[in-house]
Image (cartoon, rainbow, N blue to C red; front, side):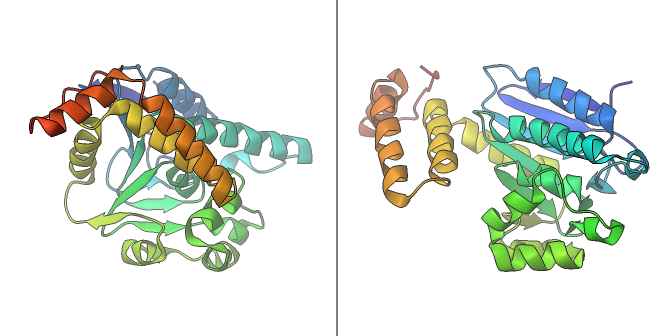
Length: 254
């Protein structure tokens, strides 16, 4: 039985990690997750990733796979996880992490690969790898400081401590804390995003992601180039016409 499910609800793609009891990231989950990502259709405008149940979003790697790892095997394990998470991060569609429960180790690294993170108020976050004598290996040492700054990232990674959803929000690790059904809230946000110009959303994501690795001037050049590309689209003409005529736009993705 597969440990990751993919379904599409209109223009929203939902990936569910279902690997009881805490949705650990073992080899099967990585394989199934990659397969799920490859199933995402072009008509999907937003992707949501969730963990089954309310105990954990994803509570980290499967530690049972770690004993006896050689240097080469350990590096290969990390590169495999990084490749899958990079595939998620590089999707043209925005990706929302709908977080409910423990989000630890590889689970937090998965959330970091998403564009937006929404969490229930009783969720907990952490990178506890140093407690096992290892380090985060699925991108955590790179994505976390880029998101919340080096100082706070070092504190969380060096201490291995867990933090609450409220603290995670305060640190800029997540974008919203809610009470109630996290998936429902994520779908609401996804529907808002999906109603906007899909090409514009894709180009905005590209501008932000590519520009983050460049100087301000270089990033602005990328922004201008992408803006120019959008000016040739039907969606740009439709969006401007709808605004001027005071009606809702009907974007087609062309």
